[in-house]
Length: 214
Image (cartoon, rainbow, N blue to C red; front, top):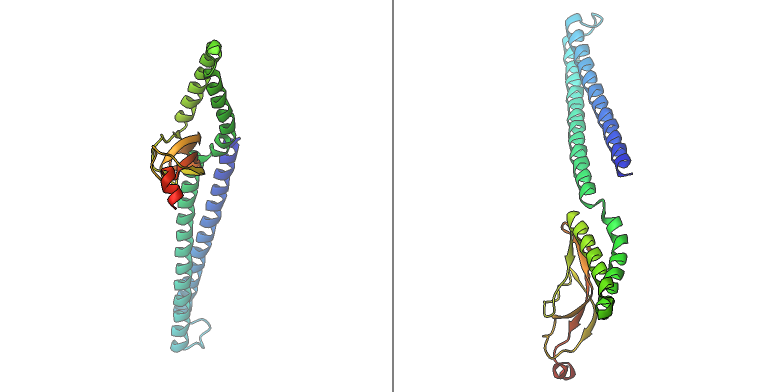
């Protein structure tokens, strides 16, 4: 599916390049025709009744048109270069972040798997189930890392960072200082340098007496 999409984009780029080059060639031909007409008028006199001042006037007009066509040609070339750079940039972005929608859809299943693992660990008699869950979680984490997905897993006492953390609740805590993380309720993830999902955390409001004093 992605290959077909990429091929379609490449075909569109090729068509755009062909259109740009065709326009550039048309402008070049127009410049040549105008210059040729002016030269012919000067050499032949263009009817015999045109005096020198008229020829010079025609030459000035032809040169002005040539400059205009040259400006148009330069703009076409500049537009083509800008389009090429934009296409390269967009292709790179697609390669880096094209898997983001799939990863976003996969994360809830990963969350449920982690919850199942935590539940299994609370029952020693289900050690076989726990081991099975652990192996699957390790495999999934390895696959995500292979595709440049990194977990956001702050620890207790880490400073709350609104750029990568989402405070779902605040609570007073005697051990954890104000503005620091008490616990993580759901892990977050990054794809390269882009945030997929922030980590959901509970943030400390400080010791109970400090909260009451406020």
